[in-house]
Image (cartoon, rainbow, N blue to C red; front, side):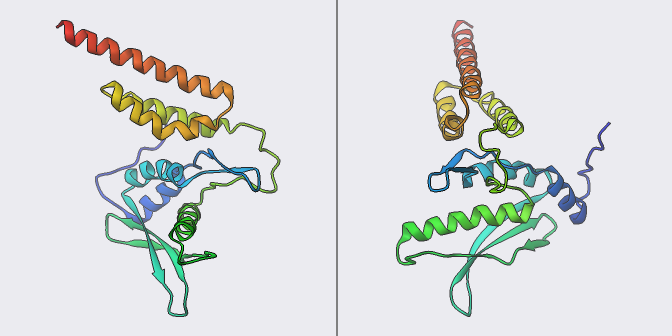
Amino acid sequence: MPEQKTKSKTNFDQDFFNLLHDVKNPFKGDENPHFKSKFAGLASCLKTIKPALKENNFAIQQIVKQLESGGAVLQTNLIHISGKVVCDGGIPLVSKDANDPQKLGGSITYARRYGMCAMLGIVGDDDDDANLASEPDTKAIGRLYNEFTSTISECSDQEMLQDVFKTYKKEIDALDDKSKEQFRTRYTQQVKTIKERKDKNADS
């Protein structure tokens, strides 16, 4: 039987150990057209790590810090409920035009992804040395499906269900046809469940 975590008393060292053990690699649903590789976007990274952070009494904070020597870095902080904080050294913000908000925003997003992944020891990009691009990541897809199923099960009406589905659409569209069909089938089942529940309430 797996050992259960004790939540009655917070312990920074134990919580940090559990966090690093619990957090999984995010689903890589975004595509880099220049390198023809896939990576986990910022939304996918946050969707993956936030439950593990909450479960282990942590929150994440990312801030832009100006350096005395010039330039700036994106610093990632893991804040424990005890008040202790784990900080990284910061990811340098590199932009061809710092006066262009869009380019600067892209640099910040890139740094946020890399900062949180490096801090938590997870991977959000394809391994350049691995020739696995054509192989579906079945474990990651399974985790995404379980999360998707759990989330839509909480939807109480059709409008809420559609809004939730939109947040997953980009990741689902990046899947192979067989996996896409699995997600669509589950979505259709939930549509039917909501309709049956509505009809039942109307008759009562």
